[in-house]
Amino acid sequence: MKEPDPIVFIIDDDALIRDGIQSLIRSVGLRAETFASARDFMIAKRPDTAACLVLDVRMPGLSGLDLQRQLSDANVDIPIIFITAHGDIPMTVKAMKSGAFEFLTKPFRHQEFLDAIHQALQRDQLSRRQRNAMAELQERYKALTVRERKVMDLVVSGMQTKQIASVLGTSEITAAVHRGRVMHKMQAGSPAELGSMAERLKPSANR
Image (cartoon, rainbow, N blue to C red; front, side):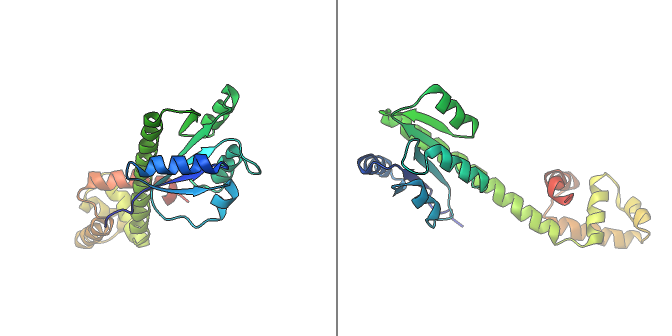
């Protein structure tokens, strides 16, 4: 299935700047949506697609840094490109330490800005794919029975089918059936691939 087109969210209390940035972004074929305030952005329904956020630092009410903190607290992972006409080193350091993708001072060069946009969108696309892949892997693991999870652990530890049968106290044929089901459900092509999956699952499997 084709991924939805990425989108750039623009938050700035200056309408002229908002419209100018939106026009620039659209001129290179990207989607862009504008908001006059951080609060408007927070209450809006946003599409489920790769995105980045172009955010003015100084705004009435909820500032850009405040919004960055709120998004972090809400576990909303979106690359943020800060823009400001009043940047200073402490502000930049604070934004970057809190995970900002880029910090640009107005007026910025269009190409520099567009490069940051493309890089931020690429990062978010990669992050989303990794999260989706992990979610799919966790669903496969949840589909295993208790016995199959035990078999998976034994396969990953390097045991052969005969040894697995001995540990489980069952026949070698039954152990082979369990092993086959594990490999099929986990969509693993080899014990090594199953081991790689087990490593990725460790934090969630131990909960």
